[in-house]
Structures are given as C-alpha cells and as structure tokens.
Image 1: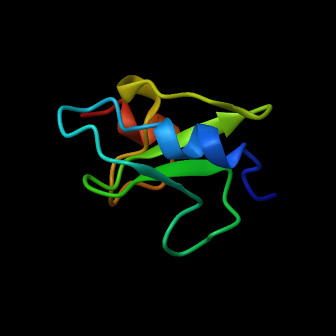
Image 2: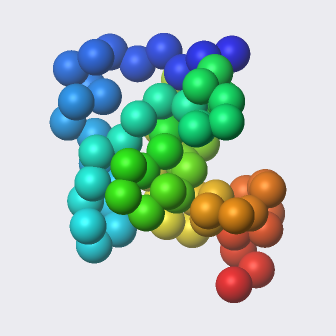
Length: 73
C-alpha cells in the first residue's frame, strides 16, 4: 500500500540525520512501499499505521533489506 500523507506534512518532513534532506514517499524500486526515503542519504523510514517513524535506529540503511538488518551495524 502506498504511503498516504498530507502533502503539506510531506513538504516539511526531513531526514533526522545531519543533512536534514527532504523525504519522498516509497523507494526508488517500489514507489508504493510503506516507507519514506531520504533524498540525500537514502535511508528508508517505515510508516506504521499512517505514522512516519523518523528514528535513525529504525531506518533501513541503503543496501539493507530489512529494518532488523539496520540495527546490525
């Protein structure tokens, strides 16, 4: 299911990492994925029950497949 967030909210959300880049809905490979992807670092933040989880510990790192993999660094 695609991420359904208010456009105004999506415009002000930013990656919590140092670069604070804008986020976009979905992933480059799956625009309907339930994640927000950072336009700078590529981290993917899950959207659970319509709520973006913008925690670096919960982010999927670029090149990782699952949220669990992100915690193994």
